[in-house]
Image 1 (spheres, rainbow, N blue to C red):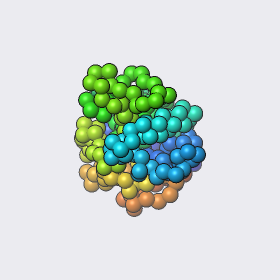
Image 2: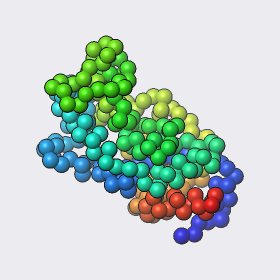
Image 3: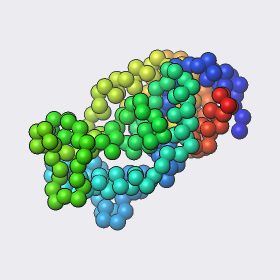
Image 4: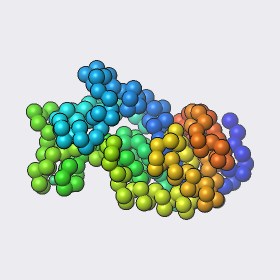
Length: 244
Ligand SMILES: [Zn+2]
């Protein structure tokens, strides 16, 4: 694989860089999508019926158990070379903002501690009432664990259907997209809003847009550089070509 020398020089400057990652990056680690992952006991439910505040109000224990099962599934998954390449880019580029739509925490596992998690993180648990984060909780209890501060029910710190994205994270993401020189859109279908609009915001402000995805997306016609394939193969080669 060869890269356009202009892209290489652009990254060497270094630019203000933003990378947005989506489900495709997690799938390369073997993590099944939300929908495909509904197996066994859970096959009878649609994710939309479980991942909502209404569902949690109706049957908190059912939703708690589903997330306990999903957290367990994530434990068997490891970051892939794409996650590590992004962590390496963050070391090389001082003004680098990583934004992810993924809730699995794989970027953190790859050493990326500072990032914007638009949809939350499945490994974090917080109070449904007062937002206090819980450090420890029991998954195997008869009832849903409760907040040590106010006694409210604990829930995963993820964004459910019908819920707004965390405002501070979204604002930081928009600000980064509007002010960057280069925007990478990686493993994301470009259809889930508001994340999809970030790349267009960057493009409209004159940023160079690089898309890495298995297949074409609505962003593809606007992108300056398009790579169809696995981010776990393309990103490490790009890092090698620029900084190797
Ligand atoms: Zn509380």
